[in-house]
Image (tube, rainbow, N blue to C red):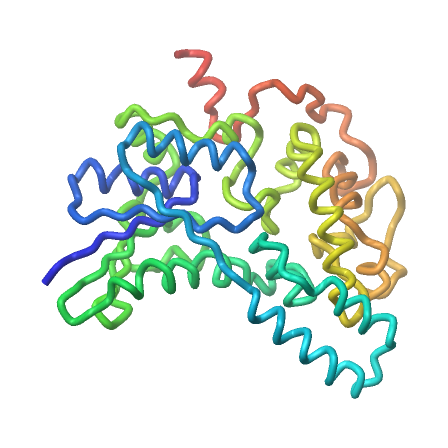
Length: 322
């Protein structure tokens, strides 16, 4: 029986700590895998190169491919949408935009005709879990193999993760292993220091999480930092919104479902949900992220220096002390 150890690496603090634990234990048959969503920041790609150089571990890259599903969606639109009485202008617009772009996140959204949300968080399964299973884990499965999937999750991250076991069996010789499940955040960064590995630099640029940028679950202050430091990211999401909108049967799509939030530009409480989506864009949540007092007024203390160190984890103090 051969044991294959597969470590999921996102470039974030927890997955990096998990990889470092595997290295510290001199884990045999180690494979590190990064699922590229296509919505990552360039600094994360560079950080993965840094990890490879410093640890000596090659990090395989996998990407989801939606080519066949987009083609199936085109066939469905050509037949069913017209039968359903959808306006011909909407049908033609959807058919024009439903072409694979090669970017997994964007292709997922135009296939779905919408963006993921907190209530429908299909991005993790479609862009991370499934590509890893299909391209890395399943080829290793066999009667003489055991696969251990190392996952960098911690119990204090969410209620769903609080009660996860440290190890469980999926089936077919596949096991999930969560070595840092009971760690707190200081322990995660201590593992970086102990192994001589720098954290992803995005953590010192106001980011509370590293992965998609922006993540649909990003905090208000994090969105404000993204808009300040990386305005090109907001521009990209704005372009994607206009593309995905054309693939939507309702002719509406917005990245954040929180566009109802009041902000100094005015309230949207009088609009229906469809009207909100028709008029909303990433620009509205960005403006809201700059406000205080529930969106009543702009925050006069908001950061304006795009080069200043900012960390939710006290990394700036640590760097200054060093």
